[in-house]
Length: 160
Picture (cartoon, rainbow, N blue to C red):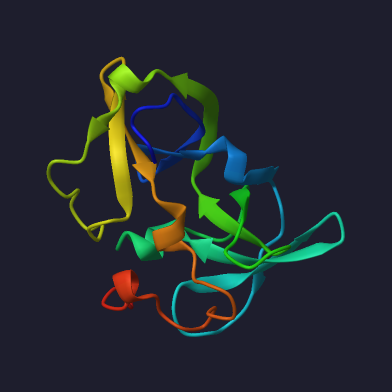
């Protein structure tokens, strides 16, 4: 994330904290979708289908070392372009909050790590009202082509 350009993104909530991802990577926001369980090692938690496409689901709670939530009831997912052309990955979040545009002057570098989140996962942050919003580095979260079921180097010590 270039802090010299404005940030256009989607804000989501996870365990009470706010995070954002670049809107250009978002392909769809899904709510109330049925998550199909899938067992593989690493951070993949299952798959879901939307518009005839099957997407692997990454549970951000697992990646951030947070306790899991129930799989019943409404679930929120953000479908993003993965590292493999034409493939989508669904990020499982607690809720999608809003779209936002942030001027470069409001973006601040990450000076210290956030508890439980590996270094490099968060690019920068900004403040809205009284809440900090952390910008997620999707390239450090989503495994590269053919890597689902394997653990990425930044996340290999987070197995739950």
